[in-house]
Amino acid sequence: MKRKSMLIVLSFVLSAVLVLAGCGSDKDNKGTGETPAAGANNQQAEKGEPVNLVWYTIGGAQKDLDKVVEEANKYLLEKINTTIEIKLIDWGDYNQKMQVIAASGEPFDLAFTSSWAFNYVEGARKGYFYELDELLEQHGQGIKKVLNPAFLEGSKIDGHNYAIPTNKELPAQAVWRFNKELLDKYNLNVTDATTLESLEPMLKVIKENEPDMYPIQVNIGPFLPYDFALEGIPVGVSLNDSELKMVNVWDTPEAKQTFETMRKYYQAGYLPPDVATKQGNEHELAGKWFVDKQHTVPFADNLWSNSLKYPVVSTPMHEPMVFNWSVTGSMQAISAQTKYPEQAMQFLNLLNTDAYLRNLMNNGIEGVHYNKISEGVYEPIPDSGYGMAAFTLGNMFLLDKLKEDPADKWEQYKVFNDNSTNAPLLGFQFDPSSVMTEIANVKNAVDEFGPALNTGSVDPAEILPKAVEKLKAQGIEKIIAEAQKQLDEWRAANNK
Image 1 (cartoon, helix red, strand yellow):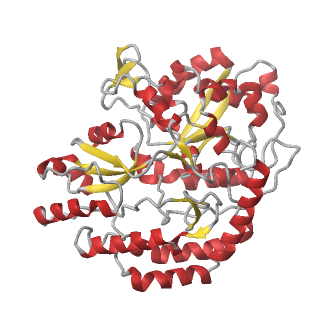
Image 2 (cartoon, rainbow, N blue to C red; image 1 turned 90 degrees about the vertical axis):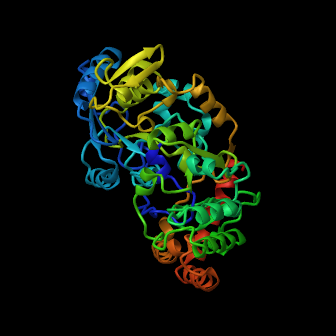
Image 3 (cartoon, rainbow, N blue to C red; image 1 turned 90 degrees about the horizontal axis):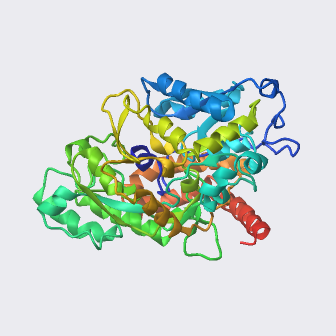
């Protein structure tokens, strides 16, 4: 959760633009690049010798990783005559290092990919990942049974799957998150806090009574009712537009109102003067904040409260909605260059269907890294040397629950998933290869104007028209036209 809440955002001022090198598919291969046919160069496996899979994944260092992998390999040898070698790369380094590894052709078999780290769409189009359609049919039937169909449908690129999504929360739902100690102290009711404007009465109370505190400590990036075609670029379609017309989101009434409201809040002293460049979460650790924006999952308030050591509550801004980036928020891909595609898929199938293996990889060894409280319930041993980020590894619904988790935790996740609606662009993956120059130029303009506008640090009446004109001068209308063309073709081909 702590990484997802930080990295997954709906705001049009986003962290990075996709830098894609368009690679055409080779229909004779299983990937978008030069991919060995399934079973080719697989002499080791054909002889019945164990196959070793090199798996790159993301997360903080684990002192006992080797011990857990050794235990897992005993089980994997029995089940599928396969072993794994995990190469764990830290959160902040993963994206850059994996880009280098993949581009250099360094051999590996499996890798974590997502919408926010080692970008899935970019990697597939560059030919880094194996096309999984046939492998899923042959060795991934368990995955297909446990995954909500929207995961595989929404993560298709040009009609094909190139990675296996983690079975977790399917939709995204933005929420206002509040410091409950301040809510209780001033008897504030958050029931009606849904829009950015609805926060104003509460912000006023906090500022008047806590003059040394800025109620909004960070760029909250309020929810905008648009589905974006590309990260980092304000091009998308309204969630309420059945015609799916691509627009410049900065040049819409919703964006204008948001900028104006943020300016009002900034001038009222609700945000720090340096909020446009402010980093870090010291305010969270100290409890010196009132409201921010996050994305939620069932029982997220409990997770946040446990992490921060003081109570947090939240209210939704909108109903749960399935976006491309939420579907692809955590995935495992098979390398296009692997010699062992079948074994790699067999391993992923087991990881997503076998409760023992899944819990071992996540929680470690019983009695060493955790203690079992009761059937399906465990308690981590503090400072044990192992504890992976659950959402990065596979089917979360197989995981044992923490002792403080509700008994129906995973049932509520399924309800959350089943009650979501699909965003209009779900399943559509924009190919920006023909407008890469314009995208780079527009991204520069977004970086120039976005942080200040989005935090109210400048007057939108003066700056927004200049920003819109700069976007036009840098080629945003050409991007819109190309995105619209591809979207219309996609709709026609898929009867949307």
